[in-house]
Length: 187
Image (cartoon, one colour):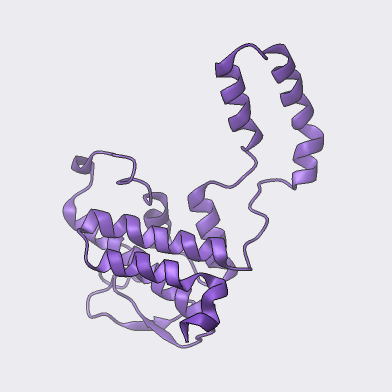
């Protein structure tokens, strides 16, 4: 069965998912987002992933960057900066994932937004002292549920999902956003 969905790279995404299941909360969070990013990279429905059409960026911004580069060829710091600026038309990671989930028809609320915004928080060594442990656990459950919803949508499922963020674990329509602890859209 899995081989028929190999075009979606479910094997990699499910490996990340399984590793998350046997990891600590902060590691789970990272692994669930790795699974989600794997799905987004493999899904055929990703949009352009750019802020303005690439042709417009190339026509209006690239000449300016080329002029700057010509004036700073000998300065490695300028070369690094210009390399970053040349890629600035691309969506950031959180925006790419948001667009991917929307393309799947999944409604995104405040909980999903916060989980996506914090996806690299632990991976980049941010201090754990700024986020209470229960908040980390809640965001991890939100991330797990996002992966569940994405996989279900990608395989054509149209039914209900279990909202792991809400007390009592209610079922919701697949396209319905997460409910949060009390079902009010807040963690």
